[in-house]
Length: 188
Image (cartoon, rainbow, N blue to C red; front, side, top):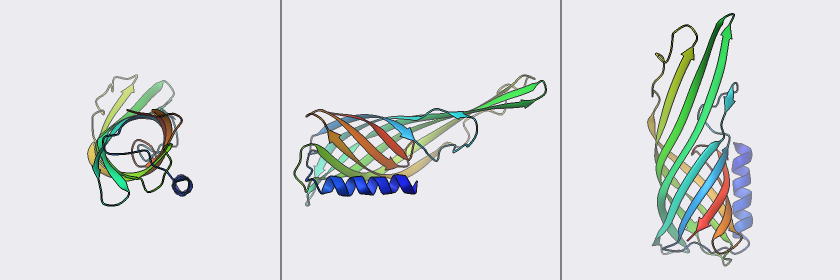
């Protein structure tokens, strides 16, 4: 986590020094990302899927300084599976996490390059956990359920680089479905 946070700070400082300005009131962005690491499940055994996320942001408010506040939505998924047993007894456990959230970010526009967007913000989410247990002796899914589902408040920082007027890449550090998310961004 410390390395990911350091990477975000270095990226942000580097981006700020190149004079960025690409996000305005009325700008719409859709992002699709793949996450690395995360606090959801944090199992050191078994197998897991990468965190997959989608987001939407719209520039809504210009503020007195060089920046715009966006409002948007977020959805992410991540899964873990663990199997084990002894002798003829075998079982598997599955944890599936889904995060649905509303997010808002401050996009810094005090610099002057149309290829960069630097931002930081907060997300209010509902984190849904579904658990399933199966075994070969009839335990079925009796121990399964949706325990652990809860509301969450998370912070994030990131940057986007646009290769053209509408297509770019992004990196974001925070507590969504993963600590570090890398992906594609589409502006319209």
